Length: 379
Image 1 (spheres, rainbow, N blue to C red):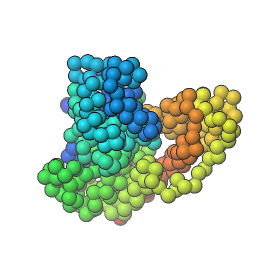
Image 2 (image 1 turned 30 degrees about the vertical axis):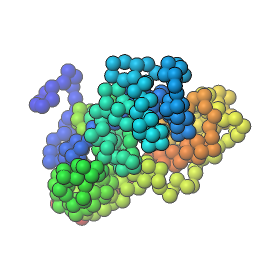
Image 3 (image 1 turned 90 degrees about the vertical axis):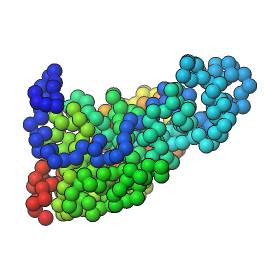
Image 4 (image 1 turned 90 degrees about the horizontal axis):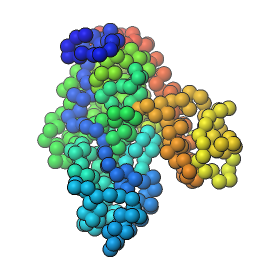
């Protein structure tokens, strides 16, 4: 055991010394913290924007608060009352309170969001105000679980506290700061949340968006995740503060591609690699995988044909994404939009696996970890 860590069980920290001089994600961003915890997801959050709008329209128009409470399944306590919530909705406006929120990987839902809508007030507001309405943020975790680090994702707008980590929760690190916090930023981009001074040499010449892509690529290196698993199990991930241009430009490109895929904004998503088969009434009953297909019914007659096993098994933040997205819709009938969305997820994950391997190839071609990030590395 060594300072500052004292553990009850042995940890493999042999490679931690290689990270001396690297910068922790927590230090790299000026502002960061856990995502939204609504404490009343069943009331404040919904998959359907229309359903959420109608719920809050009913609340705003209600005259009998007890009848509204029964129909909406909410209870009062000392810090939060439905009557107070009704007054807030009437004051703010139904539409003004509705925002998109990343609830789980590739699962964007809708939330009626306001600081006062959350019991005891929203302690995450100092972070969340920097991502509204649709600003970019990095999601990651303080510690990996079960020795496997997969908690890296990206959000545009609000993110729920377990959007990218299924146990302790994920942290949100905005790319830019809200106008009232611009005085905190003194680097190359007006309002950036990145501490550019934490980087050296070629990295400092890049824009905040390019630095973000660099970090995103590093955290998606399979070798990085295994080589530094011990450190990733006890603290925020760290990234090299220096990177020769020959490596840097490639990592920025690959990281940018990953960001676009995970935001479902990449043009590559327009070409599905799966076919939806079975037709009829696609109610999600039981999710399974066999014969390169993800099935949504018990009889395995309705589902998505052409899902490779490695895509089916791919995890983000502890979630098996292809299963989780469908499991959270059990009992629902998949719409055409749902089917198209799921097909995009499959493409995004397939491309993610390919790009992660390419990230390692780039690093290996310049000496591997950690030598590729030395300033004297082969250019």
